[in-house]
Amino acid sequence: MSKAERLIEMMITINAKKDFTAGELAKEFSVSRRTILRDLQELEQAGFPLYSEVGAAGGYHILKERILPPVTFSESEAKAIFFACQALQFYRNLPFEQETISVLKKFLNCLPLDIQSSITQIQNQVVFWIPDRHCDAPLLKSMFHIVVSRHAATIRYASMHSESIRTIIPIGLYAMNGLWYCPAYCTAANEIREFRVDRIKEIVAKKPYPKGKYPIPASIQEYLENLEVGNDCHLKIKLTDVGVKRCETECLLARGLKTFSTGGGIIDMKIRHATLEWVADYFLPLGNNATVLEPVELIQLMKHKISELYQHYYQSEG
Image (cartoon, rainbow, N blue to C red; front, side, top):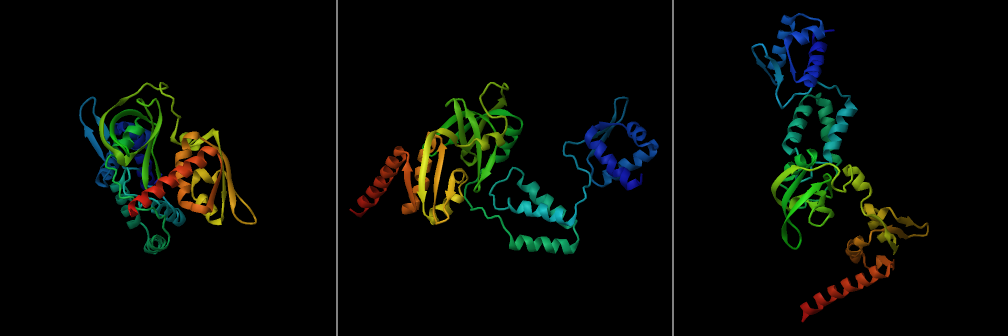
C-alpha cells in the first residue's frame, strides 16, 4: 500500500473510530508507531480535526466537525452534483445554506478548468425555477434538527387567522414550490396537520417523545405517498385542453387525470372529503375550462365562492 493510499484508508478508519491510539493504528496498518505519528501529523497539517491527550487513558480523538476522506468523481458525476444543486439555489431557506455554498466553492475549485467552464455553461442555460415566495423561515435549521433527532416541539405558530401555542410531533420536512412544510401530529387537534415552517415564529420547548405513542407514519416518504389519498369523496371534473395542462402540473389531481384523443380530458378519482375546499379554490380561476360534475357538494361550494366574489366586486362599484 502506497503512502497516499494509506492516508486515505487512515482517514476512513479514523472517521469510523473517532477515538484511537497510535499503537492501534500501527498494528492495523502493519507499520511502525513512528510512521503512524508522521502520518497523523500530515493529516493534521492538511486540516483533519484531531487532538491528542497524554497519559494512561490518552490517545487521539476526532473533533465534532469531521473531515471526510477524499472521494473521486468522474466528469459526468461532477456535473450531476452541480446539476442537482441547481434545484436548490432558488430556495430562500435551506437547512445548511452556508455549508452548501462553501462545499460547492471547494468542489468547483478542485475541478479542471475545462470542466469548470462546462459546469458554468450548464448553470447559465439550465435552471430549476422556483418562485420567490418572500417568506423567510429562520427556524428551518432548528426544525431540521428537531425532526432528525425525533423530538416533540412546542411552537408558537401563526396560521392564516390567529397565533397559537401548539405541541407537535413532526413526521418530517418537505419542500414544495419554494416553501417548507412540516407535517406533524398536533396534540391539541389530535390529528396530523401541515405546518408551514415560515409561519413558526418561536420554538418554545423541545423534548423526546415515547416511540409508538402517536399515530404517525414511519417516514416522510410514507406520509407523502398517502397524502390526500382517501375514498370518502368521488371527484369528477370535465376539462378543456387548457384545464388539462393546468391539472397536469398539480400532483394530487394528476393522479386521476385522463386525457382524450379528441381533446380535453376528465378527472375521475376518489379523494378525502376534507380536500374539497382546496379543490374549489384550485378550479375557481380556471373558469369554463373546468366543469365540476361530482360531487354535488363541490358544485354548491363553487357556486358559493363565485357568489361571494361577485358580491365583493359588485359592492365595490357601489
